[in-house]
Every structure is written in structure tokens, then in C-alpha cells.
Image 1: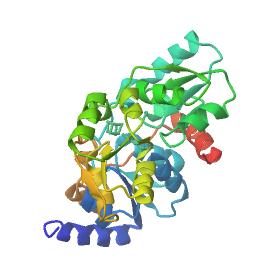
Image 2 (image 1 turned 90 degrees about the vertical axis):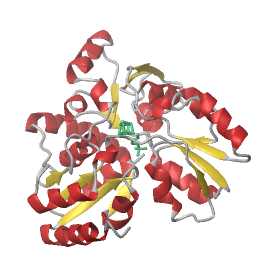
Image 3 (image 1 turned 45 degrees about the vertical axis):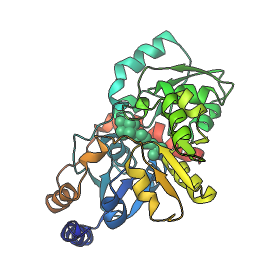
Length: 303
Ligand code: 13P
Ligand code: SF4
């Protein structure tokens, strides 16, 4: 990546000067993932690592809810996001007022929120989850019925794995909802012997037609463990490029979609945010206190 080299050096120098650490989600571009990130992972791993970070400054290369989660767990640290506009269709699908209405409609039913939600929403719920631990979190509540939001597909995929009755919201990930079971059938026909693994934000018929479903970290682990000859990662496009270097014997077939929000984060923006300390993420202290409880309850489960 010769074009990236000056940015990579400048970012790594600034990181030392600022006492900063860079957390990057598995969907970040290969140059961010490989050349400047200190810690990479899925949402759960990033939340856990954010809770342990010792650096004064955290640069979150991911979307806004991920940076907010890092801030919730590190109220005294400076958390920066290189582009504040990096949103998420799931986080935008529900508000704190919606949760209060759900509580009125289903009194006494506990509420689980996917971490892909705003701090205001997290402040209203009982516990958070990620795609890595959703079933364990739902079952940890010991309730016969649970409100699970905001992703209707993740909710359906969780419902298929538990006896707990799931009350869902209508949100969807704009990237994963585009995959269809027909796509999976066509891939199997075109690429003989291909293994297909999907993220659980995909519709349930896509998950059912796949060989495995799991969080981004679980998908990467599956590829490293199973070493398929050919594989399709039914998820955001960047991930195949990030894992490819570690498994040169695996061929990645790529019919995928980019997340426009994740793609907003670039090396020049990371450089500018570290240089000028811009893009600081703040959360109202009252909201942060309540939202932190829901995130910490999830982290404490160790699931
Ligand atoms: P993971 O927790 O599996 O990394 O998923 C985050 C996400 O935004 C998927 O679209
Ligand atoms: Fe949100 Fe989907 Fe992008 Fe993940 S891939 S950040 S769920 S819009």
C-alpha cells in the first residue's frame, strides 16, 4: 500500500505522542485493520477491550455506537471517532421513547438491546448483547418472554435457538438485509464445494441456507479452524480482505456489500482526528450512568 505509507507512519507517530490506542472493528479497511489498529475485533471484543484500555485517548475506528460504548466504559478518557457521521441503520431504527412505550405495552417484560443502539436507548434497557452472546444474554434473564431489539432478523435467529419467547422490533441492518436465500442457492450452484457462512443480522432463511452463522469474530475463527478450500463470508465486504492474509490456502468468493458507515473511516480522517483531537464523543452523564449499567451487565456475564 505505497499510497498509505505516509499516513501509516504519521498515525503511528501521533499515537505514541498522544498516548492513544486505536480500536478497529473487523469491517474496517485492510490498511486500517493491518497497519494502524492496536486492537481489532467484533463488537463484544471491542467493548471488553475498551473496558481494559489504559491509554488516555481511544480512537474508535468503527461506527458511532461503538465509540459511545467505549466512552460509557471509560468516562474519564478521551474517546475520538474519525467521522461522527458513521452511523448504523439499526441504531437509527429505535429511540428511547420507543422503549418507554414498549415497557408500557409489555409491563414487567425485560428488555435486551443489541449494542447497535444509541446510549439513550441503552439507558432504558435491562441489558445489552452482541451477536456473539445474544442467546446467552436472553437466557440469563430467566424470564419466559423477553423484548429483543432493534434487529428483527437477529431476533428471529435468536428465537430459533431458545425456548424464551422473543418480542421483536422492526429494525434491520441495511447491509445484511440485502442477502437472500436465492443468492446462497446461486452461489452453491456456481462455485462447486463452496462453504457459506453468514452473520446473524441476515434474514433467517439466509442463515438456514448457510453452513454456519456467527458474529464477525466467530466467522473469522470458523475460517481459521475449518480451512475451507473456498468460502463466502455473507457479511460486509472488507472482512474477507482482512482475514485473507492469515489463511492463504483459502479462496474467498466475494459477492458482498460494503457498509457505507464503516467505510467513512479512512487513514486521512484518523490522522486528522489524532493530530487535532477532533471527533470527541461525549454522553450526557445521567444517560451514561444508566447506559453503562446495561453494557457492564453484559460484560460481567462473560458470555
Ligand atoms: P459483530 O459484533 O458481529 O462484529 O457485528 C457488528 C456489526 O455491526 C455487524 O453488522
Ligand atoms: Fe450497522 Fe449494518 Fe453497518 Fe453493522 S453493517 S454498522 S449493523 S449498518
